[in-house]
Length: 71
Image (cartoon, rainbow, N blue to C red):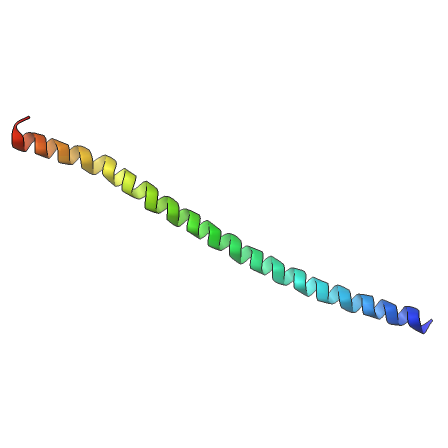
């Protein structure tokens, strides 16, 4: 009888430790997800913003150069 009770207590302790480890894994995964999302947004900003700026600045520069040289 004692062996069964000891085994149940041991299982409960193991379950509690496993739950703590799963919680730690969840927290780590959420941090990783947020980091990756931040990097994705940063990468998109570094690619899209210069392209948008070039789409506006290049025509203005060509217009100014064309007017300066009478083209």
